[in-house]
Image (cartoon, rainbow, N blue to C red; front, side, top):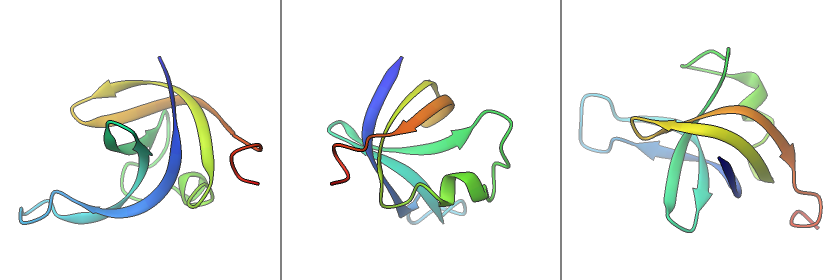
Length: 79
């Protein structure tokens, strides 16, 4: 499925033992924690490069996380 939004860094799981800062995709339906197929689940330098940019991506939702298989920077939205 295709998703679009702006990539940001945000605190997730607030108030729980799992509270941490994560890279998320801000969508109209709310933030989705991003993971990349084959990427490190704790710190992914490739995802960090996307922070602040609008992207389009293909992926699947798994337990509140968006597991991205492919993405591209949305140049028109970043101007």
